[in-house]
Amino acid sequence: MRELYVYYRVLEGDAVTAEAEAREFHSRLRAQTPGLVTRLLRRPDASDGLLTWMETYAMEPQIEPAGVSAGLQADIEREAARHLTRIDGERHVEVFVACAS
Image (cartoon, rainbow, N blue to C red; front, top):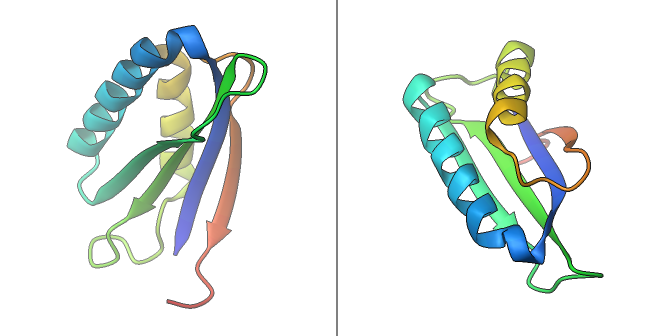
């Protein structure tokens, strides 16, 4: 199953707004894509005033056994560029596949 792990940095002072944007963004994506599972995480401590955030994207296996398609990945990244305004730098996308469950 193909999953996405996306990390980026957010200024500490933008954390509240960034979290609200990301939660709204994830809610919108889940409404548009049945079976999409999203998570939003961050490291507990800042470094040089920046927090590291992580988003994860997976599909419920009974709905889409192959996981997040390349097309859905492109849609997620296109929409993220439009809706996530508090990112400091770039979003880094990593793709992983399950090798055991």
